[in-house]
Amino acid sequence: MTTASLEDLETLEDLTREDAPAGPDLGADFWRSAKVIYPDGGKERLTVRFDRDVVDWFRAQGRGYQTRMNAVLRAYVEAKKG
Image (cartoon, rainbow, N blue to C red; front, top):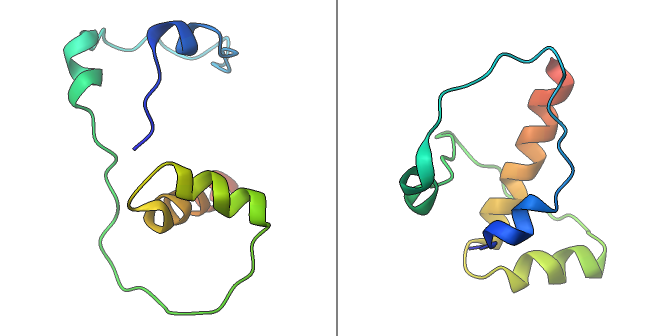
């Protein structure tokens, strides 16, 4: 699991579109207990090669790193379907 301080988050670049509608204020309690929701569905076993530094970074985040890698790939696919 990756954690970040409020100070870390405040230094990130805001990528929000200028015409994006304002969302509800979720408050600090929401983010303390927020969880990544992974879709259900079948998985396919395959052999794939990734750059060592990419794998090292995901592994350093702890248990479930392969699931997080899949979530990143899924987000990319969904963005490209757009």
